[in-house]
Image 1: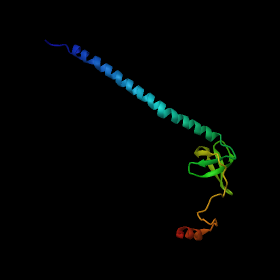
Image 2: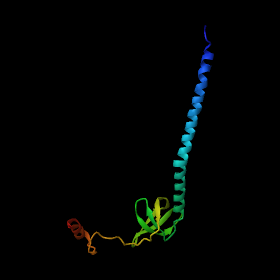
Image 3: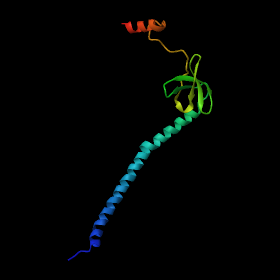
Image 4: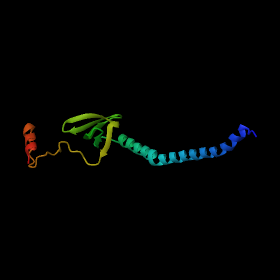
Length: 133
């Protein structure tokens, strides 16, 4: 008439252990999918970016994280001396380089907004630019 509690728990424990194995298997499959579609490609991209940063030498044209484009004048292990305009040189940390440009950099080759090609200085150029119809 009285059922031993141990026997009652044993009958229920068997299906629960199978459910736990199924859940564990689902987590493993989910981790494998995340690894191959998210983690592994990101690690590969980071490795290629690090190699690009270490291969920068004098004469290369680079783009910094801040958006500056310039030509490397001198390079050391951790810093680069970059010319961003004629006679304007800045020091950039090597790991702050975003990309290496294939096109050569021409200092002072920034275009103007004037259609006629004449570069006006100061407020005259701004006034012409704002009142242009």
